[in-house]
Length: 360
Picture (tube, rainbow, N blue to C red):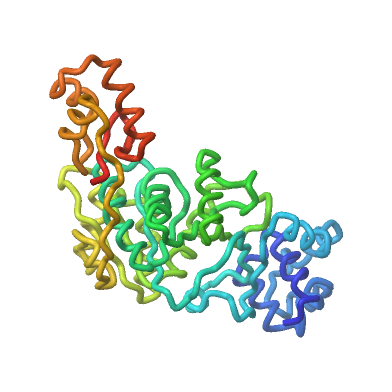
């Protein structure tokens, strides 16, 4: 493929009915995407495009400027990687309907490195968040690329754990990869950290595409397709995480699941996967058979009597503020201010919902 043809690949993705399957038909039929972009309705139908869609494209392409769209990508620091490019991820090519174009903001890692998809509930429990953190940090430190969807809950925790391990992580979006389109907006700072640390934001959707509901099942197949294996931490029986896991199974990739409390609805998805052959995960070594590198020793040391008292009560398991108040007998105001200071020093983490854990 010539560089002069790349803007036309981008332009064809701007016509939303031209998804992965239809663009692949055009690529097989026409010598270049410039020819496809300028083709007649008859030529398009002969290439396998439905007559009504071909007719609609002829009307809408009058308002699509390939060169302008491509310049906009350059302004945003976004690469358009086509399925004909050598750097297109080889594992992703193997799925049923690989994206014709990937919009990448950041850098793709070496495809020979192991890639692990991590998915789970947006409304994860403290248990799910803690387990994700404890599993992913050593796995990422061992060199595994962590792939997830930048959503609240398990996704964001997996990305953050990989970054804290000085690892590489990829965020696959159900929107455009430009800053304004990133969803949820709360995780835009996390997205910037991912890029700054050598990872990437990836989407098959053009810039300025909003995060519509129908985009996320499409996004999930990319998450699974990029990876050698998929880990499900917490998920309901009908969640999108199970769609991702099934996509992995359909592509003959490894599927892992974390067991959870039997009374929790968020355990139903992982337990169902385990019943159907997924590998249960209770420690990092269960994933790809890796040998995790030891975590660096925390540099934090309690600086006074209050910090020492709080530190002695905390562990890797989340503990609620009410329990800390009861066990330390510290005044609430003193406890809260000390917790804030300890978190700023890097000794503890606020897990949300007034639950805290210590780092070592």
